Amino acid sequence: MPKLDTAPLTENGGTLVSGNGEDLLDLSRDDVLAAFRESGALMFRGFTGGVESFCSFAERFSTRFRSHGGSNRDKIDGKDTLQTVVAGTERIGPHSELRYMPFSPDVLWFYCVRPADEGGETTLYDGARTVEGLKPDSREAFSAKPLKYSFTAPPRIWTRFLEVSSVEEATAKLSGPDPKVPEAEHAFSFDGDMLSLEYTIPAFTRPRSGGEPVYAGSIARGYEHDRVACAFADGTPIPDELRQDIIDAAERVEIAIPWRPGDVVMVDNSRVMHGRRPFTGDREIYTRFAYANFD
Image 1 (cartoon, one colour):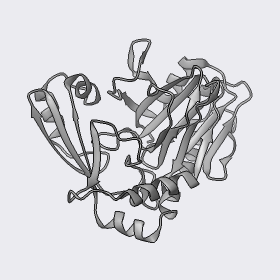
Image 2 (cartoon, one colour):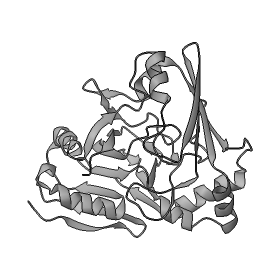
Image 3 (cartoon, one colour):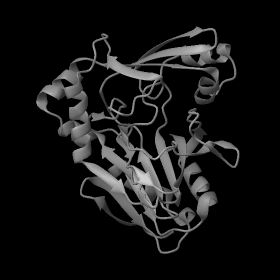
């Protein structure tokens, strides 16, 4: 197997893995894992194999894949675990995927079919560097009180993201603790078939790779939508200046990925946030949400 040809992706983090026409599947799994644990975000460029190799490559590092559940994503080839990224052309602020609920994915995978005509870079934000960049008062405020995410979902959404088919199955699944974030807690109820969920989690958590606490959440202004809200766990609103400090700290360490066809990106969802710059023209990026198999 070829030795990984790596270089820093940017001064703000990430690792570029360069190929010279090899198939992704030719890479050493152990070498890829070592690089991933080190940086939390890998970009593979210059490899061949297409979507099939991308899917097979991701499977080497995963126990299984899950659906996002959102209605603004398309299935690819009828697979609910291979989807387009969220629709639209607007900017999306820094967030970790589905960290407002139990069972969030460990690893995010992206595959570029077609980049935008202009803009459309996927953005990454190292959660440890984000914490380091916060004002001392902000760090103290977020350390003092956990966050509480609240959202509601109709059955067409919760059946997909919980991977169940009935209220009874959903109740059984949600009755246990979150295996991904042991320090998190959640409460839920059903009004008919409408799910209401509250998810309480520290603002700063330790990534699955260990190390210093990171911010890997979803409170960035402009990302919340009509079904998800976030406040402190005691019910007090998060002041705008605290939200803005999180955004500012993340954006100071932003990593922008100017896509090329065939590029693959692998992201530690417990450590590195992501977003999107606005764009024009057609843009086709596929994604998979994975539970890790790093043993």
